[in-house]
Amino acid sequence: MRKIITLQEFIMDTQAEFPFVSGQLTRLLTDIGVAAKIVNHQVNRAGLAGILGDAGSENTHNESQQKLDVFADRTFMRILTAGKSVAGIGSEEQEDYILCGDQGKSGKYVVMIDPLDGSSNADVNVSIGTIFSIFRRVTPMGESLTDRDFLQRGTEQVVAGYILYGSSTMLVYTTGSGVNGFTLDPAVGEFFLSHAKMQFPETGSIYSINDALLSEANQATKSFIAGCRETPEVGFKSRYIGSLVSDFHRNLIKGGIYLYPSTKSHPHGKLRLCYECAPLAFLALEAGGAAEDDFGSILEKLPETLHERSPFYVGSVHLIQGLRSCWMENQ
Image 1 (cartoon, rainbow, N blue to C red):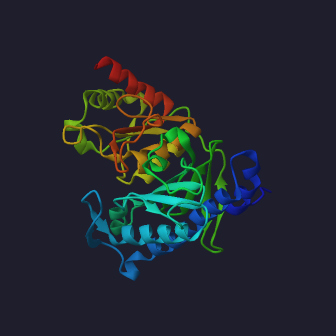
Image 2: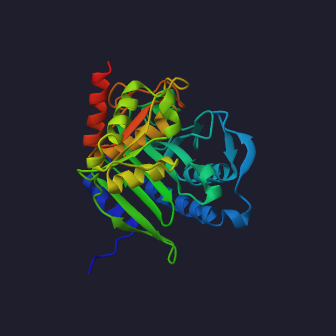
Image 3: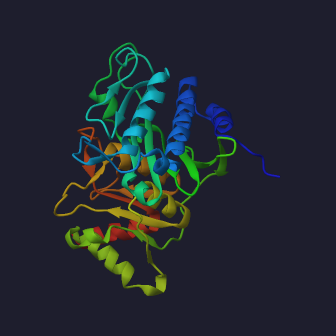
């Protein structure tokens, strides 16, 4: 009989494997799990609680905020700032970063988070998610945080993960030693290990792209998608939900590639480097996949601003290599 392992047990059992892991990081991961349960509860009853639809405000990207966006952002902020592990938080919903406690002078870690990605899909009962990553602070303890604590390369992440609110709720994360997934049992309110050592399949035939972007996408992306459609013997399938966490999770399980290319209207891409691309790139790498922008590794990019955008291609290695070949042919 398989041993049942809770998220808390797994965090405690594995922390000794990493010399940098401290009690503060353990508590921080636990706090993220707690916040996820609160958000999950509201997502599941959003229609009854009257928190579906537009909140009547805009975020820093001039995008309409959904009521669930606001709730999720406030929930994660409240839970994470209450602990002593976090020195500062960058949120996709906030224009500037938030310093915790005594102006960020204590706390070993910085959190970057997209509190609720794809939130507009909740109105039609489609899966949505939270994306997060954790960095060690750069400035010495006792000093206030600065921009460089938040603008770090993805290679400096110590934890990255996501929470998927769907037919079941999952928390998936990595500390740089493989990817593990935990499913929430609503009967007991606990996450249990359900997907150990997750890996992209060596073969995969799913491509995920918003077809409306193709007419103005870069030529490499057009060539790659044309190649997928023109090789029926491979059995390529187009699957696109429009919720980044959901599309990524499906491709991680089934094998595939997600593409959000540079376009004529968004030459620098549209997804956020710090809040979406870097965390999922770290997860992909640890799960045997790959992630790139138009020029190379996403994880090597040094952000210049909190809300910097980027093209994003992530998924199974053989499909990323195929896309890279298209780039070489179209240079």
